[in-house]
Length: 192
Image (cartoon, one colour):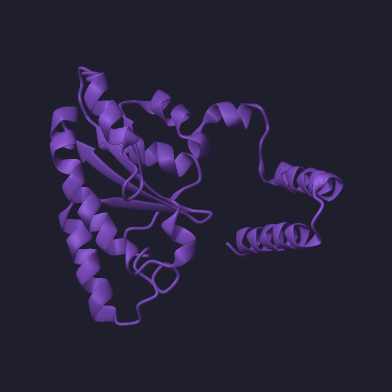
């Protein structure tokens, strides 16, 4: 898929291109601007485009063919791993590597694609050939949009979940932990 089309599709799905804004105190725990600048230079030299939205960080890298991506993604993984040392905890589990393949012939080497996507060592990875491939990424899927799972309905789901917990959970400590977690999660989402 053409690099510009991927960037456009992610922006249409509510993500912000954050290449420069990503390297701030919002995402990183380090205060030394020199360290942040070094990290930014390394990431820029690897050709990453960074998108953010609602606590998620997408790192997009474009390759010409899948075989090139397979041979190179472990190097990309090392750079992302170095980033994880300094990134705030709430973003560590929400970093995704989107590997865009700009192959006009859509060469679907299923084994290589599967090997890349099943390797979750540093972060979850997805190989994207076209816009239809976004449907396999749950938070980008239009299919989920069609069934109406939105922010407004998350509140209803949380309250239903709490009702089930109160009904079936025998220990008050567990109930309080779950309630506290859901409250913290909703305040984080409202703050963004």
